[in-house]
Image 1 (cartoon, rainbow, N blue to C red):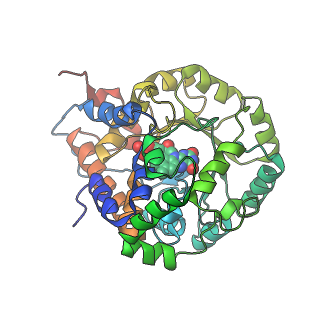
Image 2 (cartoon, protein in one colour; image 1 turned 45 degrees about the vertical axis):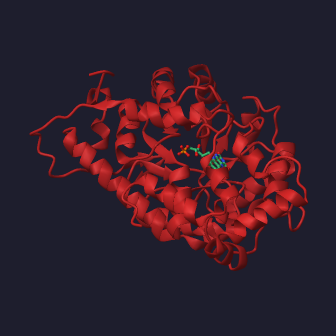
Length: 383
Ligand SMILES: Cc1cc2nc3c(=O)[nH]c(=O)nc-3n(C[C@H](O)[C@H](O)[C@H](O)COP(=O)(O)O)c2cc1C
């Protein structure tokens, strides 16, 4: 099957990944209402078709997180992406670099920071959660700076972990026993291509950055349990002082939906703020990010760069987010699925698709430059 659109990569990934892994990526918290509304609210926004405006030269390049980028898009942090394809984070980082967009490595990646930074020539960005063990955090920040990481993305919407029913049903979350192991084993056996590519040839199967603090041979479910125990639920804005003491590079705060929180992030020294509900994987019932974006952008009023993620599934969606105040968007599931479907080439193809869709949407809304996008390109609902 040829992937004609972003959603096709999801279909392909489903045929390639063991069921528990597909569900881990695809799922959201509880009823998944917020996850669905991320996509639906974006798609409900109507664009204003404007014609006869010389759209023969369209420039999609812009600045994002202090960098010149070919598209206003970054590959957002996706934990355990290295399970989607052999040495998955390396493949995705290479595709991002080739297409001129930033790659944000999740702290909870399979490939270590050293492996990923060694595989690309430009700087990689690192995402981190507040970990209880501050010595470990300090070491990791030091490692990152020494490896040329210039941007730290601190994710703040995971003080506690929400539940995903799909992970409970698949046995990925919850009490582990011989039955859950057998179920996973049979799902792996049903996907021999993945078992060979990732299971046999894709090792070592460790959590690259956390290998020093996790038991050797720890699997996916042990890792998820470790996250629950070691992420710091006592974090407040004051803790950003600690981050600032140990990190002198660019600081991006990810996981803000509320204007008051956005202002607090500005006060705490954030250079960029990512309006995000973690792809609908945390607070079910929270608004979609596209609904939350305008109020956050208005409150911040240029004090920090505003980015958005959650629910972006096409180049048209990128335009919608930019029209409502985002300077760029992050992708989560789309690149995770493209990686699972076709590896590095899949992620590159997905970025090409987005580029093409964006260029068409720009042309047909009469726009030629990212800097000119404004709410003017949207129409009120029910038009
Ligand atoms: C499988 C999976 C793992 C994720 N892991 C992380 C992570 O380690 N750190 C983080 O900040 N966000 C993580 N996220 C959230 C994404 O960075 C992003 O906010 C979200 O996926 C955007 O929504 P989308 O998937 O609809 O594009 C993860 C998302 C998924 C789907």
